[in-house]
Length: 180
Ligand code: HQG
Image 1 (cartoon, helix red, strand yellow):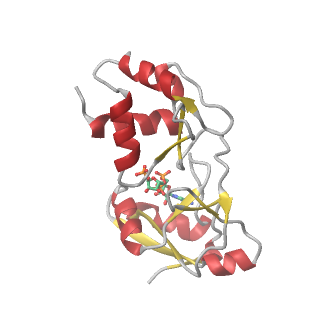
Image 2: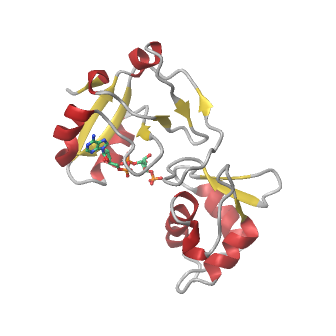
């Protein structure tokens, strides 16, 4: 069945965390062969994918999670990986303040330890509070932290902006966090 949403969620698992789920691998820059991805997904019970559908998913994804290479023979996720790939993130100077949404239950630990990437390669930050609220709501009652990204940057911490506009950094020490 052509279920774009269902296939897209599965693709994000494959391209960020678990390519072996369909017996494929990613190269060191996170790329998967489009042919292998389509074949692997079609071999999986309950899933369907063809090239037209894949083009539609990549073009219409609400967070622009995926990119093709020039001739659309390779595909990768733009951010969010837990496996160690180098998606050639661009270093950039962040705005003065960024936001991180989390669950209320994690707030005390974050105040103490700062933000850690947990199972992913980076801590994910957003430039608007609305996005952070949505991300936070995935973890229960949302709680928003402000990140003094300008100060961090001037102190020498590196920031990256993914192809789809997510700000990433390795970790955020507690002294650069704020709440209101
Ligand atoms: C929390 C979505 C306790 C952190 C979104 C988060 C995002 C701590 C959780 C992307 C902690 C990790 C990533 C500490 C961090 N103590 N908890 N010291 N430091 N945490 O899913 O940021 O829709 O790995 O606050 O849009 O929620 O999937 O990260 O709650 O960009 O494309 O540990 O996923 O994108 O959770 O989400 P996650 P996230 P997609």
